Image (cartoon, rainbow, N blue to C red):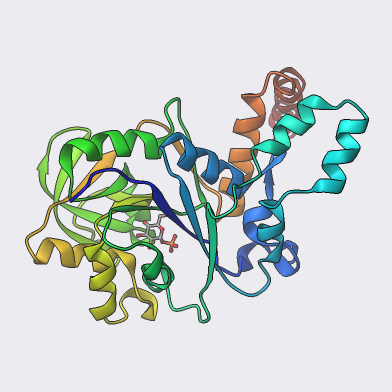
Length: 297
Ligand code: G1P
């Protein structure tokens, strides 16, 4: 099995109900952290990891995503006329070469596993990555790149992993550890959204995966799992049952849950503080508001 990963699936079919009314007319993935849409962070991370083909699993109402990755000739012409070369450069990152990007519709919200399965015909017999754009990871070396490098050594299937508090484990897929080698763990089972108190460990799956194409075949066979949905976790767990290797990878970096309002706001502040043009003013403001709220207590 080749160990080069060149394709990534981005499941973006979700309704984003937690961000209504904003998501009534804009896809959640277009919402901005500072000045870049959520999806741009995911694309940049994929590119850094060597991904060449980008597969979006979308749904009704996600047209803005397709426009975002298209050329914008009128806008570009206007910027060129005005000599705004820096902005033109920024726009370049949003353009995709013809044929590098594909959109597949998930017609029914049947779960993450089903979304990934919808892209099966574009994957063929090669390993592929899955990136959940809601999980934004700030890291010196982008998370998927860390994983691709580890995967070149291990093969098998690999999921990003992070320690979570016991009272939060029921929100995640959770790993059952066979052998803990530090950064890499060999996994003997995986449970999606375990009942409170029943998680096999405190190591949770975060939305970055490198998967064997066999996982797609498993998705053909599994029944609906947690929440009545076809779960990607269950299809990966099937790999273990069939004697193939699955690893967790403890990535370096900070993960923000941008599927929640609190996580989105934390990411916004954190990314803004990392920007030289915004840092000082924002830090000053945050200092002032925290002092005020302390004084008000
Ligand atoms: C999904 C996966 C889950 C994983 C989580 C990470 O769940 O099913 O295994 O732990 O992403 O963000 P969701 O958050 O979509 O319910």
